[in-house]
Image (tube, rainbow, N blue to C red; front, side, top):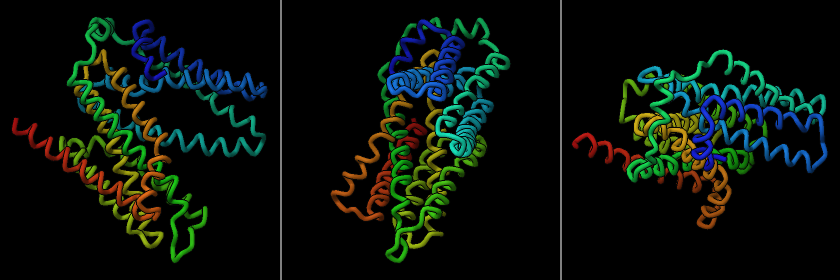
Length: 329
């Protein structure tokens, strides 16, 4: 659905696309609560995926299309924080619903109807002039745009892959030859994800002070924190390093969507965002295979994150050199 977004955009307005996506997501999401027949549940999950695909890119692009300047930067940061808060809150609620019966967990998707009502009540349609401006251009992405989007998609996929690898490997971390208990690994992962809320809320302030150097600096700090995970020999160092990765990973992702909003025309933002989100999905999907590839060299916990640290540092050097070349030009 992400790849079809650009074609659907030609036939549906923003409002129609979001309303359709939320209706599909919500109605198909709660369907298994009422019907548990496997073929029907399978069809409902397909429809659910289609609903997510319709609104996923638009949920980010809509900010860049409606806001400018400092407001846009603040909203992109807040969006990232709200995503994490929403995910954590829904996970907690699902845990309570599961205590009643497993089918009750699907009721969580009923919140989509509330979001739909709030969208219709509080989000005004784009002004007529802005609509024409967004829709009038038939020109597609040029080579420069596509190269930039491809680079951002690969970078997004890489940091998502790191995050997924942490989720997969932290539970296997050993102290004095003993694997940490599930409660300790849950603490590490919770803090690593939770710090993203702080990252989102502080994004506007960081960007205003550091400006174009924020991306290379975030990648440098990310590489240092990954190096810390690789060398960790106790729980405290693992927690501090993982929290650092969670913070700078969130900053990098927010910068990516900010750069799209600054470099891509508004009428092409939804398509560009869809490509980057595709990179995110691929990064998450290939992370187990990346771990298997790295294990061919060494299966040690340290080696995996040392490899990620090296790649992050090389990316830091690349973006740093690029920013200096652009500045001289």
